[in-house]
Amino acid sequence: QQQVKQSPQSLIVQKGGISIINCAYENTAFDYFPWYQQFPGKGPALLIAIRPDVSEKKEGRFTISFNKSAKQFSLHIMDSQPGDSATYFCAASISSGTYKYIFGTGTRLKVLA
Amino acid sequence: DADVTQTPRNRITKTGKRIMLECSQTKGHDRMYWYRQDPGLGLQLIYYSFDVKDINKGEISDGYSVSRQAQAKFSLSLESAIPNQTALYFCATSDPHSNQPQHFGDGTRLSIL
Image (cartoon, rainbow over all chains, first blue to last red; front, side, top):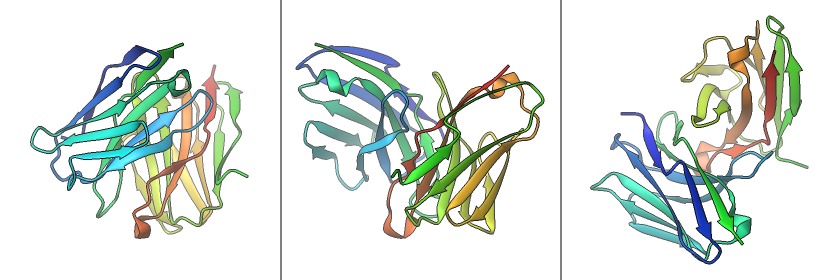
């Protein structure tokens, strides 16, 4: 019940295309869903996050879509650029209590120029 | 200067050796975390600390120990390193009072021969 399942494991997209990464969870107590971006040699950095009281959040070219009934959320990268090539992790946590993150297994995105 | 600093950045050592990885932060956050990252497995929580006197085991604490020397310092020790502890190790911090997300250091790449 604590798992967060992320897919696909890897993704190749042409420049200007849309990159879509999906995550699914089981624990309905999760109430904070961040996405992290990680470049080689660097730690994960927060990209965008959503709480279940909204179905979508957009920041620039990055959008999180959240489906509470299906217990799924996804990251959409519009107009993907070579500089977006990185590994992306979704996560889920419970705001009260321990605030521990459960991470997905990551998606390695490559955007071709 | 980085908000979350990990030392060393890289370490190669032999089986059976004692290793200490150090983390210091200037963010003033109470909560600190140690994660391990393996290819295809995402980030797994080793230990976390809510303050100097509060240390908790994460999902994969066997073979590891931690010390919270001060609010700003949290170190991870491998008492007797083994090859399957070869991985990337990340320290993170968070401030639950403002619902801030976790902030990561740039990691330590540890290789155990």
